[in-house]
Image 1 (tube, rainbow, N blue to C red):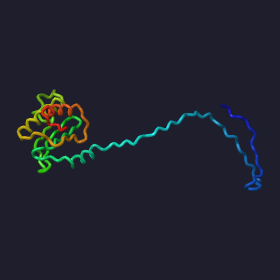
Image 2 (image 1 turned 135 degrees about the vertical axis):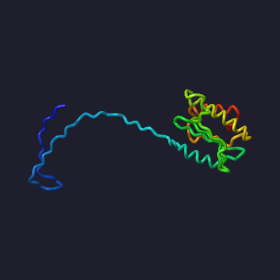
Image 3 (image 1 turned 30 degrees about the horizontal axis):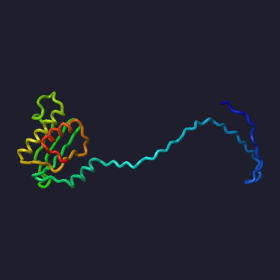
Image 4 (image 1 turned 30 degrees about the vertical axis):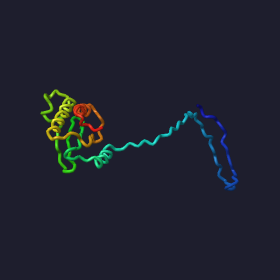
Length: 164
């Protein structure tokens, strides 16, 4: 858009400041075309997402393991799965197993999901040897149910060890 020639406005007197000897030159303001965009304001609902670790700590205060009903704690890293039966009263670990152990892997080509399933079966055998018929709580430590945790849960749920 080409600038428009408008004569310069000259003011010699002003009602507020009185007479001035200096002449004020006001140049015309060039306007540009603005795009008018509609502004959509959406109301956000209050979404409360709780930290999984804080949620786990609060649950652990409520559910404590005993020697006859231990707590089953599962930790899932990026590649492996670790499970243990915990007696919180005596502060003892009754069973510990991970998918890293060679006894749960038949060969190096086995996937960690297959090793997690074998870990669940071994946990059931350990519970039978320790005369444990049920667990007090199942603690995933705030981890989502991935492929490895699901394979582990299938193995132990067949024997009724997952609480409802």
